[in-house]
Amino acid sequence: MKLLMIYMTRFGYTPTTKTVESMPEHSGNKIFENVQTAFIHVEEKDIGNEVSVKRKLIKNLKWISGKNNTKKIILHSFAHLAESKADPVFTKSLFDETEERLSNSGFQVEQTPFGYFLDLEVEAPGFSLARVFKDL
Image (cartoon, rainbow, N blue to C red; front, top):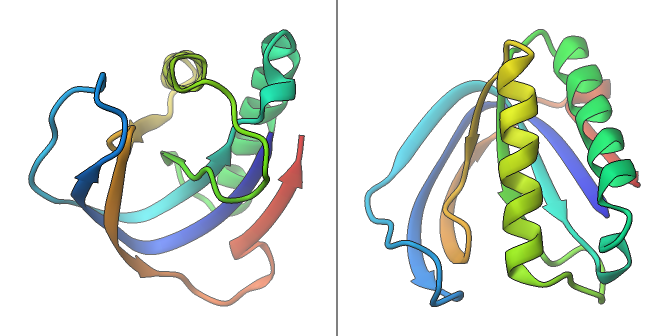
């Protein structure tokens, strides 16, 4: 798994093109403020290691959210950080489980529409821990 975490003062999206036909329909835009975003690329090698990968993902998201003083997290599937990709069904399941665990820990968690290309609105400050990359 590759994980690009970016703290954003403003993050918004609008679904444009559906790329995974089995996913639900989404329309309309959403905007968030003072949020920790997680651009997540789940790799084929993560299948079979989901317990370990999910634990590391959650640990990193809790850590960086604390450093950036926010309890709001956005999970965004970003399958452009490596060549190998996990199956979309596996990836979506991992996202859903991660959202549930973080929500149970007191975080406000949302996912961008899975299986869509999105127009993104991004405002990200430039300080040390605003952008962190991890190879889990």
